[in-house]
Every structure is written in structure tokens, then in C-alpha cells.
Length: 222
Figure 1 (cartoon, one colour):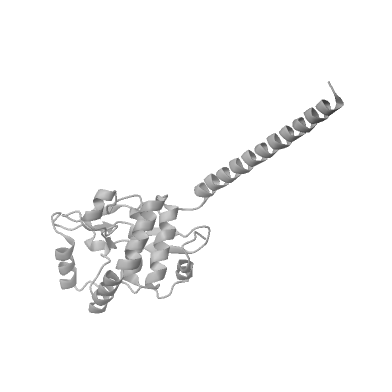
Figure 2: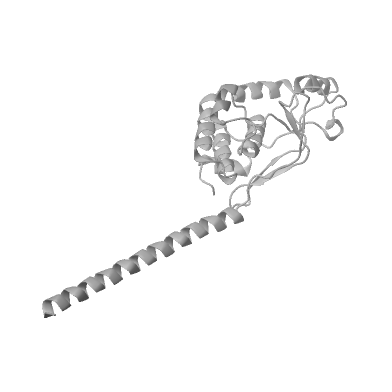
């Protein structure tokens, strides 16, 4: 074998070794990244799953315990109070064919968003972005997350204003302990709310501009 052939063989061998080492480093980096994300998903808290009681028509539900969601890797939390009435995600029936319904993977995030829209301690935009953060931590897929965010971002002004008007009228949305179990299991929320109003039930005072609101200036999980 000539010296030139030997030289080419050695160069080829060095190139292969270098390429194999690069591939191994890339694989190690990929495994490390995936493992880090998996560990992060285990460490970061997700919105909890409290107990609910449905009204007779199964369109509205009462939370039977406080629902405290610690946001990302922070000490800030949102507490949906026991007795809060929610309809989960307000998604038009026409979109149910796309796999979207009130009770999807995003259901827990939707309860938090319902509460933020009612209490209105944060701005609407902050509430919408906090919904996205809660959906990310609830392992909602990208399509559903984007579709729901666009829905509330573009169509949320009407319910936001309607909630503000109802609160101004003094209408309750948090059911007191003694009324958590309706005597008539067939009653719906509008009729039960009328009974609460008749019994002079009032909502608690909601904190305005609580510290967690600033986390809603971005859709990134903090």
C-alpha cells in the first residue's frame, strides 16, 4: 500500500471518529434536554383537581373546596374559593366537532379563568395570559391551547363586561357553605341564584391587583 493510500485511510478514520463523537455529544445533549423537561414537568405544580357538584342541567358546577394553583416555579398562587360556580370552558357547540368541549384537558385552567373573569382583580389581558400558563401546566396540546387563547382574547370582552355588570348589581357567584347542597337536585344555576339573592347572599370582597397578576404580562410559565 502506498504512503498516499495510508495517509488517506488515516484521514478518513480521523474524520469518522470525529463525526461519531459529534453524534454522541448531540445524542447526550438531546437526552439531557428531554430529561430536564420531564423532571421540570414533575417538579412544577399543575392546577389541582378539586371536587365539584353539578346543578341539575350539568351546565354549571359548584366547587366544593378551595382550588389553589401555585403558578409555575413561583410562590404566587391563585385560589378559586370554595363555592365558586363555573361552567368550565365556555366553548360554542359548533366547535365541539373539533374536539373542543367544556370539559377537556384545559378544564381546570378554565375554572381558574372563570374566577379571574369574575373577580376582575387583574386586567382581562392578564387573565387571558394566566389561562395560557395554566393550560401549559395542565399539559394541554398546542392546538387546543392556541384555539382557546384566541377565543378568549378575541371574544372575551362580552363576558368580561357582563360579569362586571352582574357584580355591580350585587349578584352572587360564590355559594356559601350552608347552601352548597341544593335541596332540589334538579334545580339549575339561574334559579338557584335567584334563591340566593332572595336570601340576601353576597359575594366576598375580592382582592384587587393581587401580586400574581403581573405574571399574566407574559404567556411564559415562570
